[in-house]
Amino acid sequence: MFQPNLIEKDMIYTTFNWDYANERFIYSKLIIILTQQKEIQYIKNGAIIRIDTIKDISKTPQVLHNFQQIKYLQWCGKYGLNDQKVGKWFAKWNCETIIDVGGIYSDDGKKQGLWKEMIKNYWIKAQAYEIGQYVSDLRNGTWKQIYEDKEIGGGDYNKQGQKEGKWKEFWDGFWHYSQVFYLGEYQNGNKVGRWDILCYDEIIGGGLYDKGIKLGYWIEVSDRFYEGSYITHKGQYKNGQKVGRWDICYQNKHIGGGSYEEGIKDGNWVEVSDEFQDSSQITYEGEYKKGKQIGKWNILFEKIVIGGGSYDGGIKIGNWVEVSDEFSEFSQVTVYGEYKNGQKDGKWDICYKEYWEKNAQSMKIGGGLYDEGIKSAKWVEVQDRFQKDAQVFYNGEYKNNKKVGRWDIFFQNTHIGGGQYDEGIKVGNWIELSDEFRVDSQVKYIGEYKNGKKIGKWEIMVKDEWNLRPFYYIGGGLYDEEGEEFKLGKWVDVADDKWFLTYTGEYQNGKKVGIWVEIDIYNNKNLQIGEKNYEN
Image 1 (cartoon, rainbow, N blue to C red):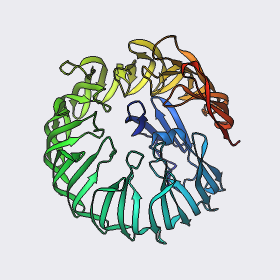
Image 2 (image 1 turned 90 degrees about the vertical axis):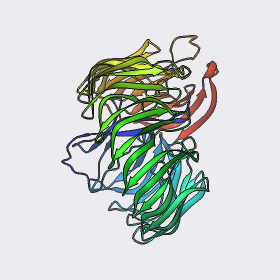
Image 3 (image 1 turned 45 degrees about the vertical axis):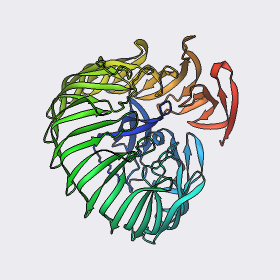
Image 4 (image 1 turned 30 degrees about the vertical axis):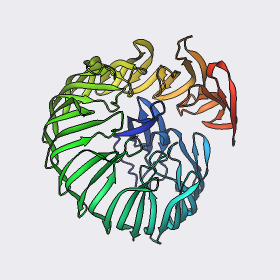
C-alpha cells in the first residue's frame, strides 16, 4: 500500500538503453521520486522525463525501471469512485495501441477474465506476452507465453493463483538475443525436481529444487546473459546456499570464480564485470574474508592490469584507478582518485586512451572534486559512451551533488550546446544532444525547460557526418505551456536510432491522431516509405 505520509526521497536506479550503433547495452542512472503529492517522478540528466499520478493508494504503486517503458508505455482506461481501475484497460507504446494487450477490471478494481499482459522486461527487442484468465485478481488455469506470434511456453495456475505442474517459462531477462527459458515442475507454487535452463531450446544449464530450495550441482546464467555476454556460473548448492568452489565461464571457457562458505564468498576470487562481453572483458581479482573484500584488488582488461585499489573490510580506501561503467575496447575511460572511509574525496581525474594505442598512457580529459562522496565545484564530465566518434563533454558546476548554473556541452572540443540547472533540474533555454550523438548521427534539440519539463517550441537539428553544411532543421513542434510536456499540433519526430527517418503528423494532448507519414530524408531524397493511421 502507498503511504500518503511518505517522506520524499531520491531513489537512484540503473536503467538500460540499447546502443544501436555498437549493438550493446548502455547503462545510466535514473532518479525516481515518490512524492507526498502522490506522484512518481522520473528524472534523467536533470530533465523530468515522466510523471505518474498514484490514484489507488490501496495498492503498492508500480514503479518502472525499464527506460523504454518509462519513455513509451502508457496505460489507458477509467477509474471508479474509489480511484480504482475499472472496466477495459489497454496499453499504448509510443502512442500506438499494442494489439490486444490489457483486459477488464471489476468495479472493485480487480482483474477479471481474459488478459494479455506484457512481460516485466518488455521493450522494443523483448515484445513478449502472457495470455490467460484472471479470477478476482488471481491468475487461474492455463496461461500461454507468446513471442513473435508463437506460443513458446506457459503452464497452469491453481485456484490460489499459484503455478502448478509442468511449466516452460520466460527467464526474467528474456529478449531477442537472450531467448532463455526455465523448464520444470511446480507444486503449490514451489519449484520441485529437475529444472533445465534453455537458450533457443538448447539445454545450457539447470539443477535440482526441493520445495523451492536449490540443492546439488547447478549451472546458472548471469543476470545480463545474452549472445554477446554468454556468462555462466557452475557450482554446488546446499540448503539453498552456494557452497564450495564456483566457476565463472564465458562461452563455456573458464575465466574466473572462487569459493563460498554457506553462501558467503571467501578466499581468492576472480569476478567479471556486469557488462562483460567480447569487447569489454573486465575482470576483478582479489580476496574475500567472510563476504567482504579485503586488501589489494586489481582490475584487468583482457587479462592486463589497468586499475584497482585497496579494501578494508569491504570499504574502499586510498588511491584507486577505476573503469567507467561503459568501459570497452573502443571506450577506454578510467577515473583516478582517492577514497576515504569508502567515499570519494578530493580531486578525481577522468582519463581516456584510444583503443589502437596499446602501449600509450591514458590522457586526462576531465574530472572535478568530491567532498565526502559529494560532487562539488567545477567539473568536466564525459558522456556514457565516450569514444573516438562520440567525444562529448559536459562542463559546469556542482553544489551538494546537484548541477547548478550554466552547463556547456562540447563535441570534439567545439562548443555545441548547453543550458541552465537549478538544484539539478533543467530550466530556461537549452540546446541538448540526442542519446545516440556521434560523428555519423549529430542530432540536437533546441527549446525551453520549465522546472525540468519541456515547454513551447522545440526544434530538431541535424548535421551530416561529412560536415558539408552547418546544423539544419529537420523537425520539431510545440509542447504545452503548463509543463505537462504534452506535444501539441503538427510535429516532425525523428527515429531514436536513425536520424534520417522522420515521422510527420499531429498530436492532441500528447497523443498521435490521424495520418502519420514516415519519410527517409537521407541525402535530401525525402522519400515517403510508409504511413500509419492513429485512432482519434
